[in-house]
Length: 340
Image: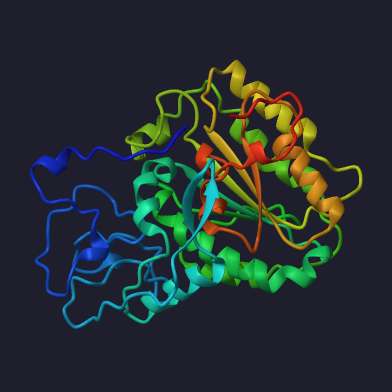
């Protein structure tokens, strides 16, 4: 699936609502015909009225309609990296958290690269989004950084998921449904690194129930999320796996990924219907090799896996597994895959 601009049927009647960053204090409120994108806010009395996920620690919406709230330019310089000869937006975790915390204080700062990213809104909107946190003992040196990545990704993805973010941990069999950014971090803090995680079992427990829905009609989803649920099969799904790749020596996930791709093909589902983004912490050669094999070494016809370092581009963390522009597989040798 390639991301592109969305056509808003209301655009012929009302001024565009995508240029929130250019609004000035005191701008009159305008009709808003769709849910907000990252960096936007629907013109309601209080964003908390329409999104229970927003709390005192999670005010990631545009407050510029209030003339008493100053708009400040982000002090973060715009950076870019080059992909297929074309620069694409770049945002570090620290940059993203700085903007988020500005907004918590009532100041509107624009995310670095947001002007380009907002045109990819349809790629993320309406998908199910889930975080799987590897909290095995090997993640101990990276857990503070993992907490920051978790805070930011949960904040950025929540407006896009019709029924709310899912949160998993490798040492816990439960699925958590946090209703606020505070609760995401509370659950994270309740799961410190310990022991050895069975990544294969935890990964399978998430993917296999989703896979079992291929070809089935989701009547409940159609009833409650009519615009985002396909008539047959589950909604598109993005899974973000925060890990160092240091798992049980016998754990590769190769069998599970191949089975997933085969099921997608059998059901006639499109490439990128599911995207699995491994966000790698540390520099373990074993962990890096394991994740890169899953990403580009299996020779599969459908590309459902991407991997990126935890200190890399946040936009790639969000889009690398579901958008070809952000997928850099062509840079690495692969087995049986042709890249432009």
